[in-house]
Amino acid sequence: MEFLQSAATADQLPASKVEIALVGRSNVGKSSLLNAIANRRQLARTSKSPGATRLLNVFEVGAPGSGRFLVDLPGYGFAKVSKNEQRRWQAMIEEYLTTRETLSCVLVLIDGEVGPTPLDLGTLDWLESIGLPYRLVATKSDKVRPSKSRTRRAELVHKLGVDKADVRWVSAAKGTGIAELRGDILTLLED
Ligand SMILES: Nc1nc2c(ncn2[C@@H]2O[C@H](COP(=O)(O)OP(=O)(O)OP(=O)(O)O)[C@@H](O)[C@H]2O)c(=O)[nH]1
Ligand SMILES: [Mg+2]
Image (cartoon, rainbow, N blue to C red):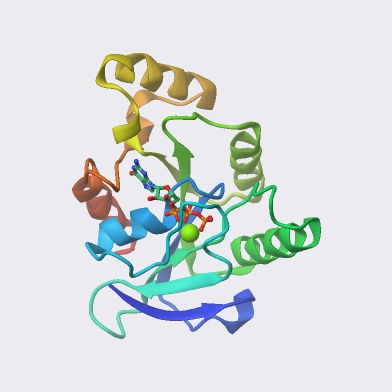
């Protein structure tokens, strides 16, 4: 996987055959997950403080020219960014998600330690309303103590109103679930 381009608007993006995007609140671990999937340390910029990703960042999966993209997006719900900038990011993300014709599916990341926030649930409702297919990924599984893991997983699927099997648990830090998710992504990018 290689970095291809950043863009501030969807119409500046290069043409793709098929693509998948990473969606989720700021700091949930989107860019870290992209790096883990690529098995590269800082292919996408990550940071302790929210707001590390500020543009639509396009990565090409497989051979150069494959036209199969993985897109890293800015996060939502980052209170420390000015209201104006939040609105601008929101508009950029929404424009991208509603107009990108080759976007076949998004991965919605939920913090496995924190669980789904009202903003996460609102995002899922919105994705359903525009008919964009999504897959659920719970991040930072290493932060959940093994003794709490069962309860936490049950709580998460309950709050999301989905089946247990519909959520992939991953840890970018420890590599847990990464091979499986990479497989999912490659399959999604085949159609
Ligand atoms: N323990 C643990 N920390 C993680 C994991 N994934 C990401 N983090 C940490 O979470 C913080 C945010 O990670 P990013 O990947 O930058 O998050 P992001 O969703 O891209 O954030 P924005 O670009 O601001 O939207 C960083 O400090 C990461 O090191 C994980 O699997 N385990
Ligand atoms: Mg990021």
